[in-house]
Image (tube, rainbow, N blue to C red; front, side, top):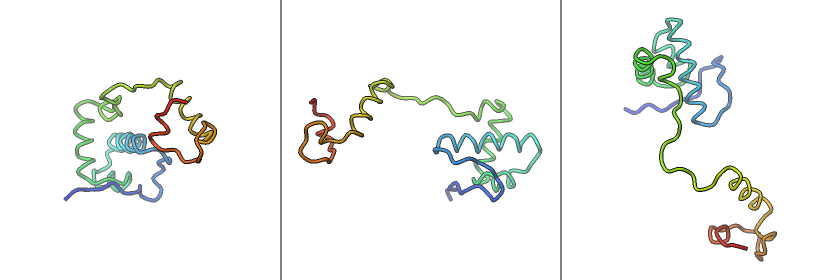
Length: 116
Protein backbone atom coordinates (compact mmCIF):
# COMPACT_ATOMS: atom_id res chain seq x y z
CA UNK A 1 0.00 0.00 0.00
CA UNK A 2 1.39 3.39 -1.01
CA UNK A 3 1.85 6.03 1.62
CA UNK A 4 0.91 9.61 0.87
CA UNK A 5 2.52 12.51 2.70
CA UNK A 6 0.25 14.13 5.24
CA UNK A 7 0.42 17.50 6.90
CA UNK A 8 2.96 17.62 9.70
CA UNK A 9 1.72 16.86 13.19
CA UNK A 10 0.61 19.73 15.38
CA UNK A 11 3.61 21.48 16.82
CA UNK A 12 5.91 20.40 13.96
CA UNK A 13 7.01 23.77 12.64
CA UNK A 14 7.58 23.35 8.92
CA UNK A 15 7.15 26.61 7.02
CA UNK A 16 4.73 26.92 4.07
CA UNK A 17 6.96 26.05 1.11
CA UNK A 18 6.63 24.81 -2.47
CA UNK A 19 6.66 21.01 -2.69
CA UNK A 20 10.39 20.40 -3.42
CA UNK A 21 11.47 22.67 -0.58
CA UNK A 22 8.85 21.19 1.78
CA UNK A 23 10.05 17.67 1.01
CA UNK A 24 13.65 18.69 1.72
CA UNK A 25 12.61 20.48 4.92
CA UNK A 26 10.97 17.25 6.09
CA UNK A 27 14.15 15.28 5.42
CA UNK A 28 16.33 17.90 7.16
CA UNK A 29 14.00 17.80 10.19
CA UNK A 30 14.24 14.00 10.14
CA UNK A 31 18.05 14.21 10.29
CA UNK A 32 17.81 16.32 13.45
CA UNK A 33 15.52 13.70 14.94
CA UNK A 34 17.80 10.82 13.84
CA UNK A 35 20.65 12.50 15.68
CA UNK A 36 18.44 12.82 18.77
CA UNK A 37 17.70 9.07 18.69
CA UNK A 38 14.00 9.43 17.89
CA UNK A 39 12.27 6.32 16.49
CA UNK A 40 11.21 6.06 12.84
CA UNK A 41 7.52 5.93 13.78
CA UNK A 42 7.79 9.12 15.85
CA UNK A 43 9.68 10.89 13.07
CA UNK A 44 7.08 9.80 10.52
CA UNK A 45 4.31 11.31 12.66
CA UNK A 46 6.31 14.47 13.36
CA UNK A 47 7.06 15.30 9.72
CA UNK A 48 3.91 13.85 8.13
CA UNK A 49 5.24 10.96 6.07
CA UNK A 50 4.95 7.18 6.27
CA UNK A 51 7.42 5.13 8.27
CA UNK A 52 8.77 3.50 5.09
CA UNK A 53 9.97 6.91 3.87
CA UNK A 54 11.71 7.49 7.18
CA UNK A 55 13.37 4.05 6.94
CA UNK A 56 14.71 4.96 3.48
CA UNK A 57 15.90 8.34 4.72
CA UNK A 58 17.62 6.77 7.75
CA UNK A 59 19.43 4.27 5.51
CA UNK A 60 20.61 7.09 3.22
CA UNK A 61 21.63 9.19 6.22
CA UNK A 62 23.60 6.30 7.75
CA UNK A 63 25.41 5.67 4.45
CA UNK A 64 25.98 9.24 3.28
CA UNK A 65 25.24 11.63 6.10
CA UNK A 66 22.88 14.60 6.01
CA UNK A 67 24.04 15.60 2.52
CA UNK A 68 22.56 12.36 1.15
CA UNK A 69 19.11 13.74 1.96
CA UNK A 70 19.57 17.17 0.39
CA UNK A 71 17.69 18.08 -2.74
CA UNK A 72 19.65 17.47 -5.92
CA UNK A 73 19.82 19.82 -8.87
CA UNK A 74 17.18 19.26 -11.51
CA UNK A 75 18.17 16.92 -14.30
CA UNK A 76 17.03 16.84 -17.86
CA UNK A 77 17.07 19.21 -20.74
CA UNK A 78 18.42 22.68 -20.00
CA UNK A 79 15.89 25.54 -20.21
CA UNK A 80 15.50 27.29 -23.54
CA UNK A 81 15.06 30.70 -21.93
CA UNK A 82 17.40 32.39 -19.48
CA UNK A 83 16.10 34.25 -16.43
CA UNK A 84 15.95 37.61 -18.24
CA UNK A 85 13.93 36.11 -21.10
CA UNK A 86 11.53 34.41 -18.67
CA UNK A 87 10.99 37.72 -16.89
CA UNK A 88 10.35 39.47 -20.24
CA UNK A 89 7.70 36.88 -21.14
CA UNK A 90 6.14 37.10 -17.68
CA UNK A 91 5.91 40.91 -17.90
CA UNK A 92 4.37 40.72 -21.39
CA UNK A 93 1.78 38.20 -20.21
CA UNK A 94 0.90 40.36 -17.20
CA UNK A 95 0.21 43.35 -19.51
CA UNK A 96 -2.47 41.26 -21.19
CA UNK A 97 -3.22 40.14 -24.73
CA UNK A 98 -4.98 43.40 -25.71
CA UNK A 99 -1.83 45.38 -24.88
CA UNK A 100 -0.14 43.31 -27.58
CA UNK A 101 -2.71 44.03 -30.29
CA UNK A 102 -5.16 41.18 -29.80
CA UNK A 103 -8.87 41.98 -29.85
CA UNK A 104 -9.77 39.98 -26.75
CA UNK A 105 -7.83 39.91 -23.51
CA UNK A 106 -7.62 36.12 -23.41
CA UNK A 107 -4.18 34.53 -23.81
CA UNK A 108 -4.02 31.34 -25.87
CA UNK A 109 -0.97 29.25 -26.70
CA UNK A 110 -1.19 30.44 -30.29
CA UNK A 111 -1.20 34.08 -29.16
CA UNK A 112 1.63 33.57 -26.72
CA UNK A 113 3.71 32.08 -29.54
CA UNK A 114 2.83 34.84 -32.06
CA UNK A 115 5.44 37.52 -32.71
CA UNK A 116 3.99 41.01 -32.49
